[in-house]
Image (cartoon, rainbow, N blue to C red; front, side, top):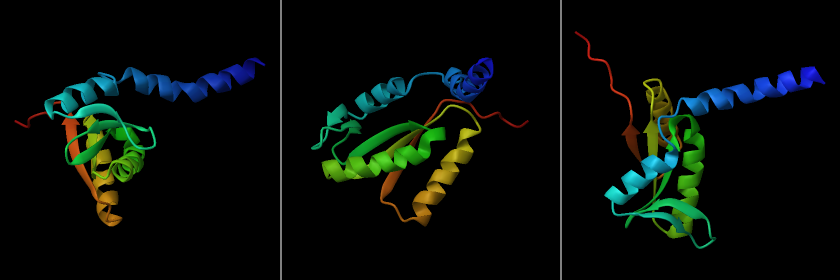
Length: 129
């Protein structure tokens, strides 16, 4: 029985360690950005799905860089349900997240997806001397 608890704990470890690395919750970034853009937070679409942020022209999905695939799916769903253009605000909190942004943009281009991408960057790049 003890062995099962150890395995269970090891499975949860990546989730807990990554959650600790977040500077803020997604809602923090969503609230600030969406209000600045004069958007509506948690708009209810026709199917009652909450859209992260609804602008005049775009239905926007917010997500951290490590969940970019989910953001693509959600943004396309939001666009379909609202009749607005699809958009993603990707939250980059670490320098390594730039690689995930690049991967997401390549996928969008390769699959010719009608998604606009905006970025919130939480880190400072080091200046080379």
